[in-house]
Amino acid sequence: MKRVIKTAAAALLSLTSAGIGGTAYFYRRTMKRSEAKTERTIKMSGTDWHQYEPFMKARKKWMLSQPHKDVYIKSKDGLKLHGTYFKGEEGNKAVICFHGYTSQGMSDYIGLSKYYLEKGFRMLLADERAHGQSEGEYIGFGCADRWDALEWIRWMIDEAGEEVQILLHGTSMGGATVLMTAGLELPEQVKGIVSDCAFTSPKYVFTHVLKTMYHLPAFPMIPIADRVNKRRAGYGLDECNAAREVRKAKVPALLIHGEEDRFVPCSMCEEIYENYGALKSKLIVPGAGHAESYYKEREMYEEALNAFIGGIIK
Image (cartoon, rainbow, N blue to C red; front, side, top):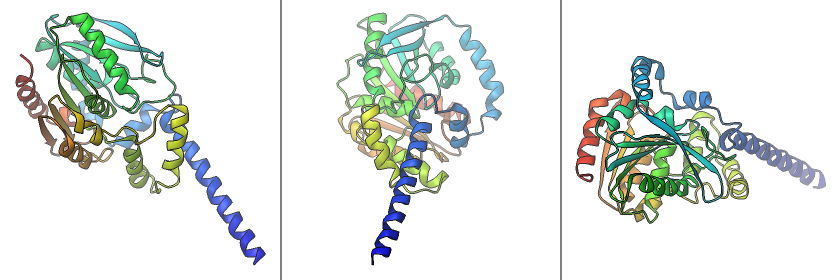
């Protein structure tokens, strides 16, 4: 009996050690700025971006030819955050854009820059914490970034004046950011939210990735990572869930998702839509993968934006 107990104890210790080791590896590669790589994210997302390179190259050249400058703010916890500001026609319409995981402000809105700037919008492309030129060691996954979004909103009001009408637009992690921000008390200048391919919470998107891409169970990695992240980054992996936060939303939203998204499943969009507490509309783009909707069906995407913006911004 003692031998059986010793064998079982050794096996349990081995499994526990393997779980802790696997979690540490997963956590570093996912949550720490220095370990999270853009190339790995692009590969995991499954979207073939090469086919859009000519369009993106031409659009980027146009975007960079427009007047723009670097701007900076401080987060509530003391991080220096960076954004790129396009003043446009300096009117009373503005959009603040939030990018996806391991990306940066000037990357994810190359395509949409022409749409917004030609419609007279001021455009602020924020680098989320631990991305681009913004400070931070641990990635916020929307949970921490929603508070930064509030600071950027205040910056835009100071810049453009009290009469400014603000739209928040987020893609992937940025989509989760703007949806989680919708659950906060927002200044009256925020008129609406556009969320493209957002996830519900880090916990559930990590669980999905572990299962579908690594064929691994969520336990024990997710519970251990949750405890570690609370201690190091200051938030739990399901502490802030977009599908819960949007129940408190008071501004209209347009939710967009690619039907063939394998990175963030379209079912997350449906869950968020069902829970959204204010006026809402939805666009599911056939054949589009992760963050591909605008490039796959530009006319459809812009028509949806026209209809949505036309109903909330004068």
